Length: 85
Image (cartoon, rainbow, N blue to C red; front, side, top):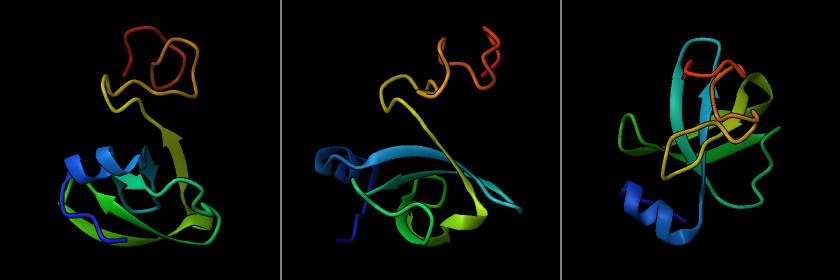
């Protein structure tokens, strides 16, 4: 499925991730159930286009689409340090 905007991703129930690659940090939405260890197709919110990512070479950190807070830390901050996003 191809997405054309952030709103399309939200309506389709795609998951928002902060993706840390060896060369860049991106905000990417990925289809539910996507295999994050292989080749991943996703919508890049930075470039507003569909991209493919080599998942085994990246770190995927889930984000709350409403607040932008990280979902993998207790307080929603980047490293578990309050106020550090």
